[in-house]
Length: 237
Image (tube, rainbow, N blue to C red; front, side):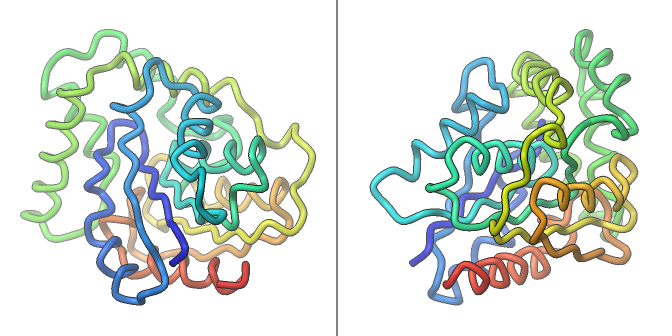
């Protein structure tokens, strides 16, 4: 079975992939593993987390990395630094730099003083734009609880690292199978941000998800699982 590592975004629990995991397991072709990198990597940066992710794969075949938001930047960094260990990528609602990220400046400022659940809720609400009110509230509650438990330190560390990285300054990686997904209703990132990954990964294929916000693993898990299957097919299973 092909290992698939699932990388959530900043202040997003690994449980964001809970509905994706069984969809992948049912195919019999994948061994999905969620990575709670905010807890597992002290003072996380893109490079430190990418190295950690690749270390988890040693002894096995090259992996498919599925990265959501900041997780997309981590997955891309892993492909840049360790190309032999990465079979394919699925990059979800991210972008190769932070130049057009609508909320990164205020987010960094707010994280420096964030203390209460009300502070964490402000970030969580941007992450889900669809779903019935009860389901959306449950998702927001999970993110608030996770944010409270990990605190602002890891979030500031990774986001400052991400803000300082522009993948468009790196040489293109030809031939890496990449699937790009983007929620049409994402308030944080625009579809053009995800499309910009094609400058680093020229063979990337883009899919826009109508009615979906910033977090397709929650809002459209079947679309995420389907993208993994397409990526696997492109790298030979």
